[in-house]
Amino acid sequence: AEKIILDVDTGSDDAVAIMTAILSPDIQVEAICSVAGNKDIDKTTENTLRVVQHLGADVPVYRGCSQPLVKFLREDRQPKKVHGLELVVDGKAVQMHADTLDIPEAKIHEQETPAPVFYLNYLHQAEEPITLVAVGPLTNLAVALMLDPMVVEKVKRIVVMGGGYKVTNATSTAEFNIWYDPEAAQRVLDSGAEVVFVPLDATHRACVSKSDCARFREIGTKASVFAAELIEQRILMHNAFQPLDIPDAAAVHDALAVCYVINESVLKDVRYVHCAIGFRGLGEGQTVVDPRHVTAEKNCWFAFDGDREKFVAMLNEILALGE
Image (cartoon, rainbow, N blue to C red; front, side, top):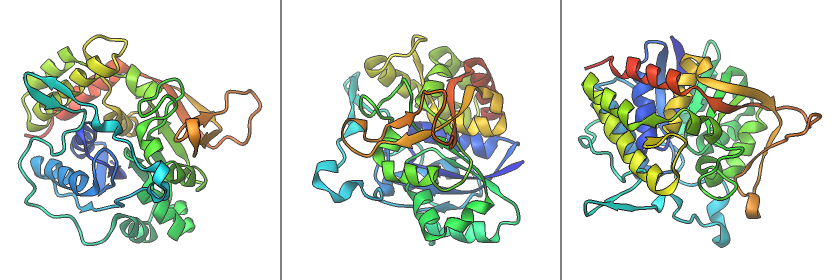
């Protein structure tokens, strides 16, 4: 099994990603780190603990950074409520990410060490390089890499759910995770690690439909039923605000990044490119992929497509494991 550390800002798709990683026989989750993003750090940490507890898993959770590196220091860069879009369904307000996941409150606790310090401790002691799967803003990784750039030697690769070439969601040019902390994303790109972007171009193509959710419900495990509930909520939001090519479907971004670690062929058209991150103005948080034939030095892999059938089949198989 491939060892990974998962870095999450747990909302709905993060929860599916955590369950997929914990249940997959091909992945050994060494730890999960929370970060502020979809919600504030208290909520993302609590939600992460809830998911781990829901599966009865023995995986340590480390609380990470509560703010981006630079962004909130200036008045004009305070966060707008991007993920605050709400839909009223049957008199109830629905969001893409509920403040608290609808499973029992966590009785388990996070570790005392802050996430960036945990990264340094773990990587210093690691005997072989490990894969980091970051599906929220990249603040924790950036802080760790700033404290000790040499730990990158113990990083096999960093799989990032973030960015978009032709598809965006936070602004007209940017995907949320990168937009929330663009400086952290650039820091990770500059670290010398092998970086693989799983952007919206891939996640929107490898979407999950309402009928897929019905199948998850039939499977009947704790994980599959909870995943179905979360994804159905996402479908309502996608239909209202960002309909996909397939009707009644949602992107489950973060779980696709986890599935890539298990089986790389779940991403298609993965190209070695030069990417830089925009920091200001219209391009804030944009993953600027150089489309030219002769480019600056290539620095990451970027997926332009995803295999919907393979992704759904993997979720079916993995979410069926466990109780």
